[in-house]
Length: 280
Ligand code: PAF
Image (cartoon, rainbow, N blue to C red):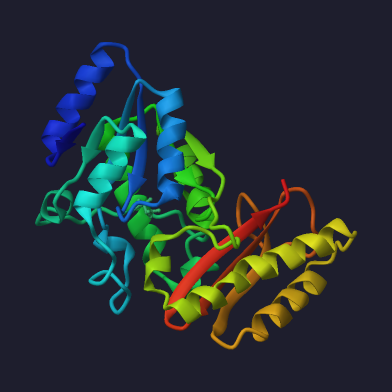
């Protein structure tokens, strides 16, 4: 497995791969790898000749006061896990290369980046789209892989790819969960053991919603009210939002259908966790 640190070296490597008519799969990450990331690598390994994983904690997607400084970083562990999963190249650039002096250009998917996650984290998706756009231009993948856990990120990246004519297929892999249902996330590391137990409430509320819908409930308001009640009962949980939206544009829907997605963001202690459940 190769570790590439500069934009120039990554570009040259991709060009060589393309000259030999081989395909590139990109798994963008911020490191602190877990089985969710590794499931993306396994998919990429099956589809593509060369698997590139980027590891870059992107400062542009963190607001002042968020967890940029304490975001978990363990490159040696990531390197071992990536190698074992079958990654060919880790792209591990320096912040000063990615955001060189005089950097002024951002990519934003307007409107969709202001709602739900975007309301609580106003500059987040602009930061995500900017780095993902840069990675697409540097690595030049045929396919890029993202996890469904970050459902709004997925919808926004798909829109960016469509709107800006990136010639890249986006593949979405299902959320990987712990045994008790908690969605895998690098931020789960912040939870104390008491909080870790309390964090089950996100999945529990989604599961309760699923049961109601399976039993014929079609009104979003009724499902959302029940979810709020479930969350209220967990004393360490503080709900940020819960919603039922169209999975493509994230607009709220009052009648639940096959294209609906139930989304939730909840603080457990100080840690903010997100999850979702699709009805597709
Ligand atoms: O989902 C993530 O880990 C990040 O938002 C991404 C896509 C790697 C961009 O920094």
